[in-house]
Length: 165
Image 1 (cartoon, rainbow, N blue to C red):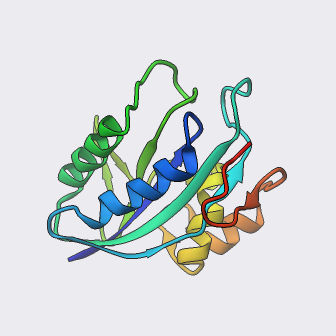
Image 2: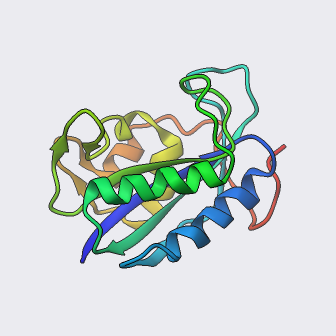
């Protein structure tokens, strides 16, 4: 069994509900346990700015799935949530990113681990730091240090179930 970290987010429909439903779906994956989940965060859009704010979270899993099988499971959860890949960094019902798997470094056409842009994204670092502030990401650094160096302006922790406006 391997520890795996997943980022969750969305900004179309009811993103709070979609992220919480995705957490439930992660807990039901075969050979996988949901160990911990972060709170929800309302964050400004990243990349394409002319879109609604996002709701983001992170999950810590313990899984027996290999990285590509876990990625396929995440993509299937997105698809069931109505994810349409129309525009890079654009609006979406649900986005699940495999961020890191303990002891795994990978860089191929489908997957790079750890995720190469964690250090640039407050919407990933805030919930990830809630789960594992001392996690060291190979080639990037300690999560708490990465968060301290990141602009978190416009990000706010949500009360559970609160809808992002």
